[in-house]
Image (cartoon, rainbow, N blue to C red):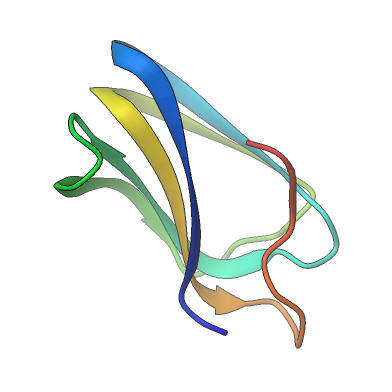
Length: 85
């Protein structure tokens, strides 16, 4: 069901210049990329309603310890499936 999300803890605050999403056929049509310094307070650094699936590369200029893909609309009846994040 929507929404669905996955987060990665980088272990320490770091510069984040790029996020690459390698989707399975069950991809997000609408999603956002959020970052956080503490895993609780998130800020959105990228948002789209036109996700295409396959491999999506997002260039960023931000910092944070945690990075999250927050899906708000699936491309089909199945959930969100990422091969790589």
